[in-house]
Length: 402
Image 1 (tube, rainbow, N blue to C red):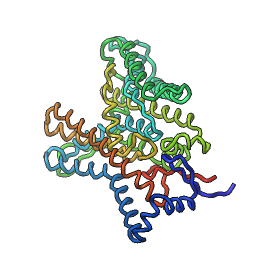
Image 2: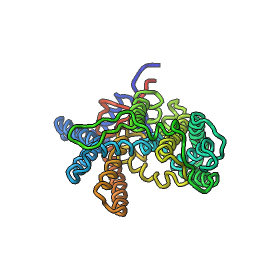
Image 3: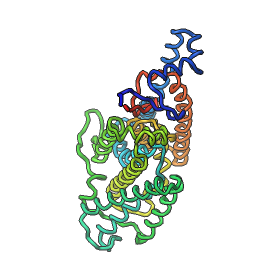
Image 4: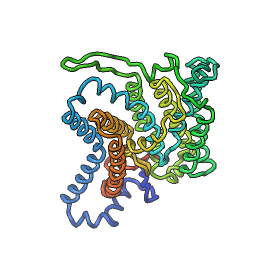
């Protein structure tokens, strides 16, 4: 079989070679318009679309920078080591939950059950580790085994979700909402009715310990680099390379762009989606470890309602609810933006009611940005002459050799 580069156009349902693409653009709707305007007009249009693409891809970092500068000017208490440390702490658990949604978003799916997975796994670990006088079952399980059990439970929950969605063909919204309520109910059911407190120090290492503490000349307080902040940053970097430079990552984007075309080109769609949900469950369990370790306790209400924050941070970071585009580094920017806004507004002593309003506005902004991005993406898909095709960016074209 010849090694000719083939392009999949997700929303058109066709596969074209590089040469036939040029013919389509020349002979059909776009070609005559571009030919009439001439070569210079054609180049200008393509460059404009590419510029808009770059702007939309990097908008999140402009927003992060703007928010940081605004709060630094608005409050003299923002730009100091303690605030930076608090931001690094804030991104940890939220970051793993956003990472879980980023994986599912890329494949055109989502998982609403992660907040309940977080609470359920944390409660199971607490009951097995902590003594009865502090709300546990007095089993005395070593914290290492409890952590491994949490991770395994998270993976199994993801496996169950993925199986129902791919094999039983149940809608992902129905499955994950059902698991959201089921796991939350189970968490309440197995809890003793009170807060289960006092984890051993080893369990709390990820959520509560720091790697570095040092002072900065001219500022009060010390800059603390939390273990969780470093771990979540490394996790996003690893996920970026995993989704962008591996065959599994390319398969994810292909499935999100057009599932049937991906299946017709030999991609095992069901297996890929199941693995993605397993990764989402794993990330939710890690978030549970971080929050339980930081609070030194587990409650049935842990993570309640955080799924809306998670989706807002992921979408404003460039992830698409339609699947097939976005990258996890942008999603990390969404996490940073959310943490900066939350920390800054609290430092300025803004009323909690107005903080909720700001969160709603941020979610609305995320949806509007996604709508604009999707509108211009369709134009980019048509006008861009496929001079490059990078999986994980906004062009949505998945190529393979056949």
